[in-house]
Length: 113
Length: 113
Image (tube, rainbow over all chains, first blue to last red; front, top):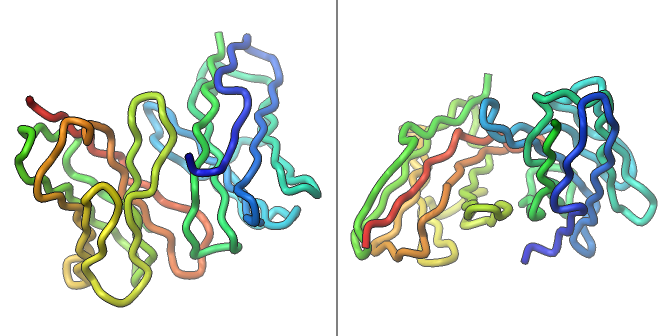
């Protein structure tokens, strides 16, 4: 158990819908990262927050957004969902803003029908 | 562009045999290097990491990895594989002043009884 929690574990929804994935980092960690794992793209970095502020963006679609709240939990919002958004979404956390070990949560499996 | 190459998509070994999983990276400086393992339906678990210092690093579950600067490699080894080691293994790099992990495409390990 890494100490990072993600909810829900599974999510099934339809195209065009909007969903919110939630992540709680390890106690004491200030950085939260979101990654997407899909069969065709592999594991890809989406976005990072540090202590409530966005610090870096990766291959994140404009339909996707995230935020980190004062209690340091984070939410990833996915809208106008497409079939291709079906993937495993991981949250990771670390103490520092970068160059640090990231600990991963169990992931949320999103299925878009 | 920074990249991580895991040339072996699948590797099959017999239980008790030794294992080496290959990882090569493309980056100008020495990045932070990681190996993660993902069991079916599970998140990513950190096996070991290299930041600096001794180029042979020990990890959990009896794994070790050796950083070779001249070859831009960070291969993972285990002297005797157990059936429970069957999983997918990911090599990842984090550039020195960066934030995101860049993952290889993974190597799926199958263990023959």
